[in-house]
Length: 206
Ligand SMILES: Cc1ncc(COP(=O)(O)OP(=O)(O)O)c(N)n1
Ligand SMILES: Cc1ncsc1CCOP(=O)(O)O
Ligand SMILES: [Mg+2]
Image (tube, rainbow, N blue to C red; front, side, top):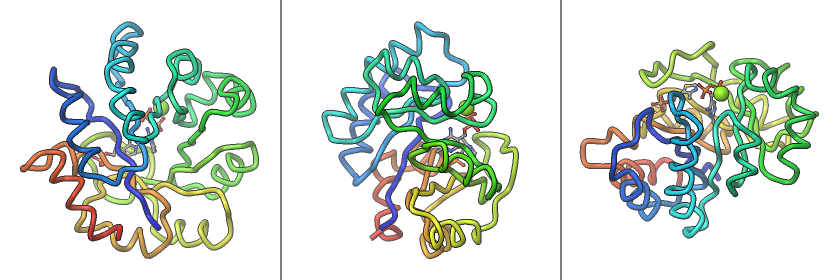
């Protein structure tokens, strides 16, 4: 069954903890990743302290983007790293040791090789994308839906699809075997609010 994987929007408003609670209560949501690319260490810690309990009190995993050590220090459930982040943190094997038993997700773009390498070195999931145009991030690659089918037919490690995903275009990704759909804009920019955004995915994930 495919599950919803939320990533926080690029900027968090003052009431974001309430918005997150509403989105998670409209679930099911498998996890939330805190992704604040412009935040300094203090702002990041404040955001983690405010948002981690909202997720974990609902049984939703709280993952931190980019910084495995901070994830461990602040009680997160794991971290998501891209290829540049791996290099900055000494490689996957070292990150795996830092995270100890916490979850580790790796960006693999459109690369079967990167995904197999990540899985062999202990990643808990691999992320492929971008599958569709997105205004949230300038993706380094575009992935074809067939990479999800290839991965899910061959491998045990779960795969995440990301990039421009909406309820209207999710079906091919689900049919191809994506274990998770990672979503930013379709939920946080939903005209009726994030809870409606989460509900809009229900029919695609049932
Ligand atoms: C689930 C998921 N997939 C991909 C990314 C992108 O990570 P990365 O390539 O490190 O880029 P930034 O998010 O750090 O800009 C992700 N964060 N989450
Ligand atoms: C972080 C990231 N990595 C590849 S695309 C993307 C952004 C996805 O955001 P949206 O769901 O709004 O397209
Ligand atoms: Mg990163």
